[in-house]
Amino acid sequence: MWLFDALVALHIVSGTIGLVTLWVPLFAKKGGALHRSWGRVFARALTVTGIIAVGISLVSLRWPLETHPWSDDAALVRGLFGWMMLYLATLTITLARYGMLVIRNRRAHARDRESLNVVLQILTFLTAANCLWHGVELGQPVMMGIPAVGLVISVLNLRYIFRETPLANEWLIQHTRGLVGAGISVYTAFLAFGAVNLMPAHAFNPILWATPTVLGMTLLIFHQGKVVLQRRRTRGAAPGPAGIA
Image (cartoon, rainbow, N blue to C red):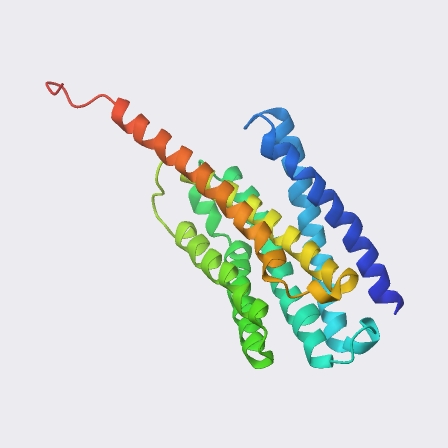
């Protein structure tokens, strides 16, 4: 179908830009011009990719076998390319926007509570829960496991959004988690959905699905550890009240 083919082509172009540009802000000097400019390109590319993926998922839900002629199982196609893609697309849009918003509002945290930011977190939770539900119905472990990320992330994001006074430099952890999380989401989608079309025998290989998440989470834990250590050092170096050594 021409609409589906056009969406897939646009999705590949914007997604490739996102996949490639991820590495520039990741390794560039943090806060530098290169980091900021390419970080914006990355976030915008992933937002566009996620929006296009929403279109792909909706077309797949409406015409599962016409859009995926390699399969004769309409329920499976709707599950994978419909409900799961809709969830991953929503997660990608939410995290890309969230990652940029928290750093923009680092000195005005109350602005993080804007309606769109909150609504996107709720939509991420709902699409993740929906993917999990359909995964149980289809007996697909991948569709049951992948939503855990969205369920947890949306709750953590909302917790930060409504926290009155975040910890020092907490915005930095949230910024990195948002954008690296978006990168994990898009790499997972490209590897997994690409494998379905190119290597059907390995489409449900858990190693293929889990690799981006494991690598991304390792990076996030390392970064968060550095921020927390810096926070503790700053507290330790702060002068105490007069008369106290």
